[in-house]
Image (cartoon, rainbow, N blue to C red):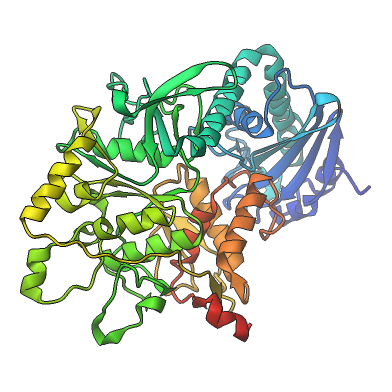
Length: 561
């Protein structure tokens, strides 16, 4: 065993800041705690260093899955660690202790890992950002020792000991996880893609807020759509089931249509107790799609939706550096369908109208039809196992093609499916003729050659890199809940793109699985506390929008590879 952290600090005390680099990999045993320096910053003003604190054989008084346990400990760490920082000890980030603030969803994150050990005990790994202290860019050895070997371990021990003192909160946290997982596993047997529990608080306090809106109208299911689900605890919860197929959410403006759709979109994640959306649970492969004018598209089969383009472009392998609203939605739907999406959530406020429904009378004026909109393709998508949840306030063809119509009226839901026959009758009277399209999920695509992204960064949800010709906009990735998920998706996408003859979907699913298991070995560099789990769909969102990335369908690529 090499020198410990304390021994190295005494050696480098008073030297130039670069001397801190000798700490990388150094370990200090402190009873049942092990402190390790994982990464060292190059300058006191640079992003902080990363320290790991391992606790072996921790006693957990509540039987729980490792994911909610780690999430619970992360939340305690986010509250506790900053209080142990040392302020006014030097320059830049000197004396800083911090972990990222978690959002209200319960997912694996690198800040805390939990693994079952022997005799029911757990091994815990904590990661934190640490600002190695200096003054005049000289190492402050004594201050660093206080920070690394006393203050941070004290914070970790306090968090672990709190498990014994307040086991009730952990039990509530773990039970919320179990209930949501149970509901999600029950959805397929009930023929549902989503569930909104009665009493749920769907609105948020503000547009960019996590907190539920005070005095909001609690959700109440229409009797005709109410289902009951028995939970492992024996408790029975009731709420509105969102069936497979085509569901249109309609109603007057400002009455809660978008709020309901956003809640379903966030239901792919489990939520913490008190969030208001603990009983809003969606199929984990439900994806939100919107228009993205100007996005990059590479060899996507959009032919089911777009039949003809000027210049006789091949819509079976459609590529562009500047997609329109309609082509961007068609491309996104096909990219996600390729990845195994179970359904799509689309809000008319964020979509190209011509992709939602067809205007037959406008076609008479133009003399051409280039698009097969979702109102026409909905039955075919449903036959292929792909559901649609569409927010639309005034699209008669969509209402006529819906399996369910939910009206939001003053934030209260009612079932108006019986009105579908009226919509069909009006369309017949107007001479509206449906177009029978065909649909099948697209073939997998393969990355033709490596595409290296130099030092990718996410700023204001824009992806920046010197090697990219444009800055991809990550804001349409609306189902992510925290910035760490965006940066993680970018890091994973960069690792996938830097390969040759790569099956994009296969790699994305593999990477997502490894993130769930706290396996970060496929990512370059030592992991910090800022890696958050993302689904394959978020990873592929980034990959598919990398300007200059070249892919082709597997049936063409495999011979070249």
